[in-house]
Length: 112
Image (cartoon, rainbow, N blue to C red; front, side, top):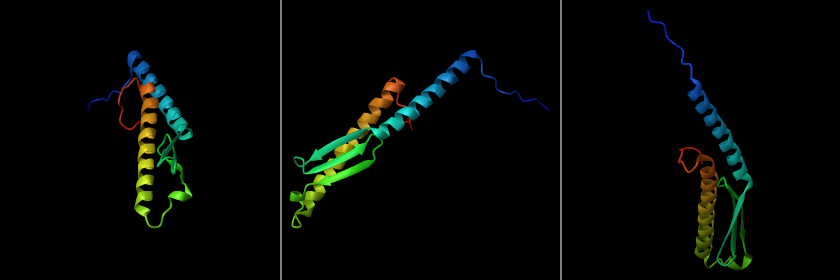
């Protein structure tokens, strides 16, 4: 019967583990902060306004009454879609910038 040895990290490995743990804590703080940051996007010359957090959550969508035309619902749908897509893109860029600042540009899956 062989005796199993328990893994004991050495000095350099311990330092690396501490650095990884610190990075994880900083990433969590940055993700929380992204929930507080907002992106505001307009479409149709200000007819549609979308406010989205850095965590890709829509906070509000405002539609100017003058663009609500029952005979042209498709135009309204297109404006809302364009505004939401732009807000999403800008929110993802913001999150990428914040995470990149922490990770030194490394693309670590699951961080954002």
